[in-house]
Amino acid sequence: MTQIRISTAAALLGVSDDTVRRWIDKGRLSPVLGEDGKQAVDGAELAALSQDLADGALDQLDDGLGRRSARNHFTGLVTRVVSDTVMSQVELQAGRHRVVSLISTEAVQELGLDVGVIATAVVKATNVTIEGNRS
Image 1 (spheres, helix red, strand yellow):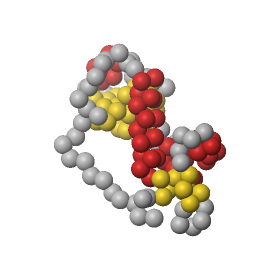
Image 2 (cartoon, helix red, strand yellow):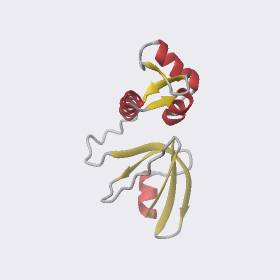
Image 3 (cartoon, rainbow, N blue to C red):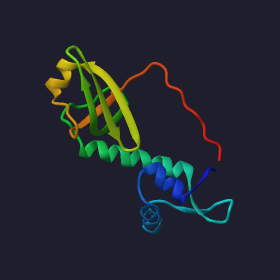
Image 4 (cartoon, rainbow, N blue to C red):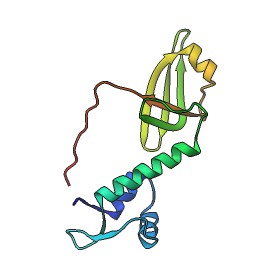
């Protein structure tokens, strides 16, 4: 069982340490005693909660497009748009993730993409790498 400290769990979920402690108090997460003797949470339980939170966030930002085959959606705020006559670079800040996309300037105009607009980046890739973080 992987044990994750409360401060690390909070950072991974993008919430405060106090929010994680409140979730423990309300039974949303179960506390465990970490190897260092401090309160922690189970990694698998935290992973399940993070998926529930992500699903809820997507439901709240339903754009009316229905279901998609791509699983990786990053909803956030457009932070930068650089355009020329043919192509544009659009930067999106989705939580702690910065997503950059190159799309046509025509698409940027049709979608009304500008700094401060809520948008969703949809990522579909044939090759994804994952790096482990040993603590």
